[in-house]
Image 1 (cartoon, rainbow, N blue to C red):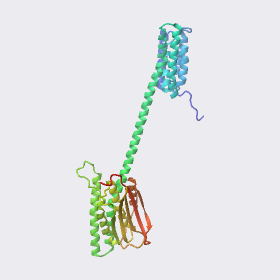
Image 2 (image 1 turned 120 degrees about the horizontal axis):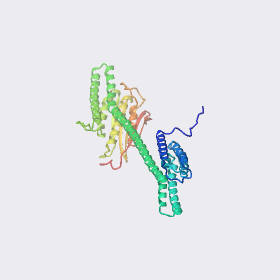
Image 3 (image 1 turned 180 degrees about the vertical axis):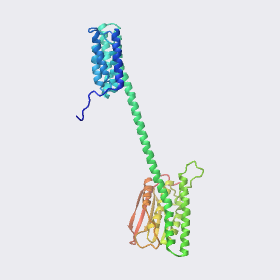
Image 4 (image 1 turned 90 degrees about the vertical axis):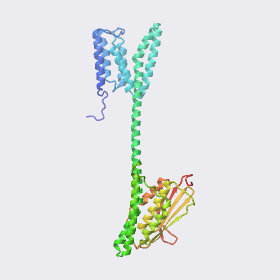
Length: 404
């Protein structure tokens, strides 16, 4: 067994077999009836069948080996002119020319129509020079119908076929790109929903976890009552935030409109709530807003800044050491700067801690990057020698939108 062997004459297409069989049968019938196409007659009777049979055999190669079929067909049709001639041989030759253009190489598809056109013009001029009568033009027309017409027809069909294949390929590529865009949009929307859900709920659930732990560990009615009060407030606020998120996810045609997104005007209430939640852990929270009076920001920037401050305060409730947590805002030039600092790694908290997953830092970074800004976080030494955890975000503000 020889590997890599390529059959030079592969199995013909069944449609080509039909064409060859019909052409051969038609030619035999014409020969039997004595119908000839009017060749030179140098070779009569049985000799007519030789080019006919050869042309029928070459029809089997019209699709798989179009170049061989064209070269052999040309020799066969020329040989047919030295016999009494058979119309079926000529008709099969026109099909071989057509197939050579349609199924041949791109170079052959370009050359064959030009070559057959030159042959037609040259033959017509030769007939006119030889016979010197207008009837010689008819021989040139016949030559064109036999070789040039099928070649140009094959070229037109091939061009239409290539255009259809290109259009199909473009449609498939467009559908693929649309599917990729849809998948990316779904991923981006899921990430946005995850950020919103985390930022809205984590703050309230962290406070609930801290104060419920305190209520369970301390057998003091007053402490338990304060803890339950904080738990109730955070539960109510958390439910309100959840309702807002559900409203955002509803169909835009729903009867109930979703609540407005939080803005920086709500930071005072946010800090006050954090101060209440962190009192049992020895934490105090302050807000330093250094933005110019009357300055306004685009809604996406306000929402991102609010969520970054909210998540930073939540992280401070979970991990910060006793001390003061400071949130600062500054609006300079074309960017809003958000900074939150909290005591880190110095001293033992008197109250319980809540576990963290690290998703908050990822969400804050994503919010900043989506607006074209920067985000950084990590521990740094302070002037008092105490380690501080810093969160810094710069959110660009488009020119012309910073002032109303």
